[in-house]
Image (cartoon, rainbow, N blue to C red; front, top):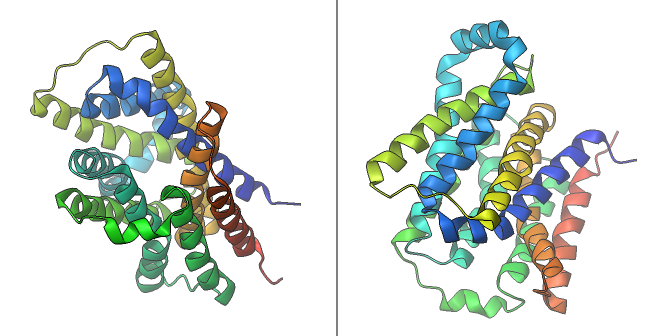
Length: 289
């Protein structure tokens, strides 16, 4: 039987994969920075309402660990989204996905150096196996396309986003374990303030989304933000930064599967790549007792 923490992490990646499909109608109606700001702004409001009865504990935890909350929220929510959306203005989604596919390896290295998390042999074997599967998925089954990619300014920004997310994974590991609800609320609040400041400073007009964009935003806020971040943060606390990060490779697989429900069917090589990613993640769950 698969432990509950693994199922929770899988569910978070399902929701993040679906976000790629939901982003289409949202970005059709809203500028990128405002889309990110509204996503996390509404997400923060939900978290505040959810955790209202724990306000006293929240203030106590914030006062004791304020630097960690500020830095983690700024990196994983504010910084990552700012760099990600800015990068996509000058690079392709394929390039961005390839850069982020290296995040499990980066997180594993940093966790070993900074947190002393020592990966097992099976774990180290799973990382390149998953990366190979991701490449097959996001290149439409034609890995030779990697040789045709142009390195542009956006790719360097994506490297920054990649580092920001790796830093978020590590810092979240350092948060107190009393309440995932309070941790997620404080992290979202910090990141939202950063995103709102950037959106106002950008001068981009704020417009109201249509019903399709509004529905997609509501789904992204509830499932792809509130629930997904809660599950992810809990998984890091229980599994560690490196072990949780490998599940990130499932995001493009679930994005592909979600798109297939709307008629964008993958080819056989992409399906094979998805199976390779899923197999590598399942292999990483296999631990000697």
